[in-house]
Image 1: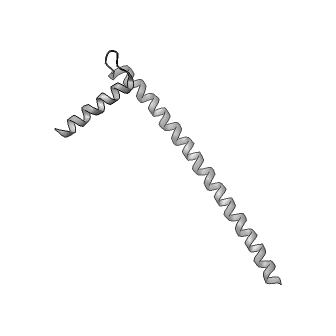
Image 2: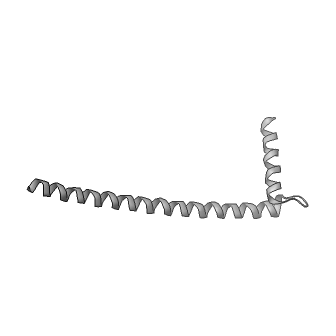
Length: 79
């Protein structure tokens, strides 16, 4: 009888520890993802502003300029 009570208590401790670990892991991962998304969005904004200011041609959008430059890079790589 004492062994089964001890086993029950150990099982409850195990579940509590595992659930606590999973919660910490989920929080850490979600926090990292938020930081990563913020960094990527910030970089995209800076990149778009740079392309808009210095690399677009007359009447060309930022997306069109990026596509044009990607094609130019590809052409340079193939030579």
